[in-house]
Amino acid sequence: MYSTYETSLSRRYLGELFDDESGGAVLLGGWAVNLLVDERFREATGRGYIGSRDIDVGFHFEEITVREDLEGSDFSRMFKRLTSMGFRGQSFRLYKDFDREGRRELQHAEAVSMLPFEVSKLYVDLVVDRIPPSFSEVFGFVPIDEPLLENAFTNGRTIDIRWEGVDLKVVEPSLLLAMKLSSVETRTRDHKKLKDIADIYALAWYSGESLDDMKEDLGLWLPPNTIGRVVRSFSQDDVSAVSDVIGVDASTIRVVLSELWARARAELNNLESLTKVGLSLFLLVNLCGIPTSHTPEYH
Image (cartoon, rainbow, N blue to C red; front, side):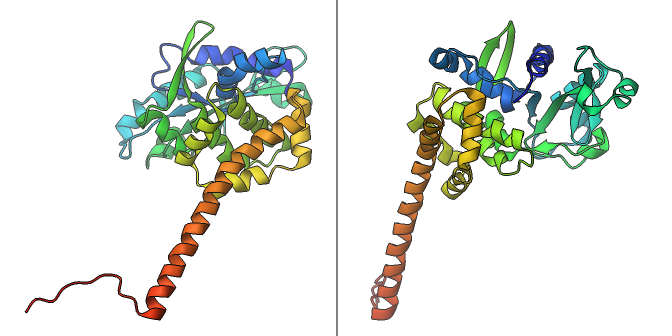
């Protein structure tokens, strides 16, 4: 899916971004999945779980955030740090160019003079739980917003992980799984979609949380019809491609994905049954003239 060079490069910068100066930032996305599942995946398969090419860092903003608060925020400190490290803006992302063959950092002028396949781009996505009104005026772009991310900060839905001498706050598995299920529908590139499906499977099966608990927690973040729609959208070809990437039998992946959908289906069936009961009572009351309550008259 991604070359060893790309994931190794991304991994190195991950360690540089998260240190004592990273403040209240949390890790989400592909690297968060890797850190949560790698040990158990390795024990089960004898291989490490796939890394990520991009780094996703999450930040919290209060509902009312004035310009001065933006300029002194953890987001601002990380943004300034990345630009001082040579990262450039591209829409809502920050990136840095590297020579794929020579494995060295490229200046922008060098990168634009080379062919696209000769250049490897390292992307860092700074994700917020809400976009304050003055954000684009201060930073010059509109960031990715993920409303579910607020739960990581306000409800303490993070896990502390010590990784290669660095203390990281990582979004907890069930919330991260909900984010993956939400994002996979918007993917326009095949490799991004396949990576999301792989991460969904890995989080459900190797995060250390029981599958039953994961399914129950998912109900906190996503409605059952969304879970069902997303999981059912994964084709046989998608699952087979994921199987080739992570080296897990396609039938095993399908069983775990089906389990995620099973709870959602049960909840939808219960809701449908309750709706039918409610409709029957409504018809009974209105067609037969049965009073719904009795208030005594006092004379």
